[in-house]
Image (cartoon, rainbow, N blue to C red; front, side, top):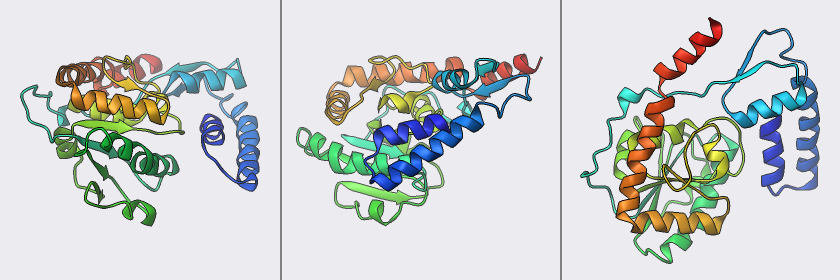
Length: 256
């Protein structure tokens, strides 16, 4: 939680009262996390940044990194010959979560218009649970807001690029794992791929600011060969280390 709060303070533009409240929470979280795991023989976290944070708070902690997994059987291996919608950007999330709302608004208001300045038919789908009024108000002829859907797989299989511009948060993003498994190219901020062994330029394009996100998105939309290559390599990343089978084996080894 302290890592989440650090990133929230750094990434969000808040008034001084909110900033002070966040810093107070951070102080309390660090104090608590410095001793809360002492009764335990081992601790697991989802990503290396989380491990580094805990070790900095208490070097005596024994911390292992074991990521989340996904049910790979639900995601058929991508078909390179399958047709995808042209210039279709996709973002998926639970909009009750602050970082997801922030990312969706940034994507719709700042990134998409600049992509459309270069690719005029680019359009965006915001898929997921509980979009608040400010997200619903984004809907127009080139932005679709679906609300909760029964299954995200059809969207992952039809869209052209998965854009994940999370500016703060912590832990592994299962939505990114599912996108990689589906063979849709991923353009993401560094925090969006925390704990995922994706290589920038191969299985994903990692971009920290709006300009870089726009450039990376346009590049994927225009480069058919890169699109296919990223889809294949993204699936391979999940197959190698993020199935529940591989994650379960790592937990079994730890408990053993």
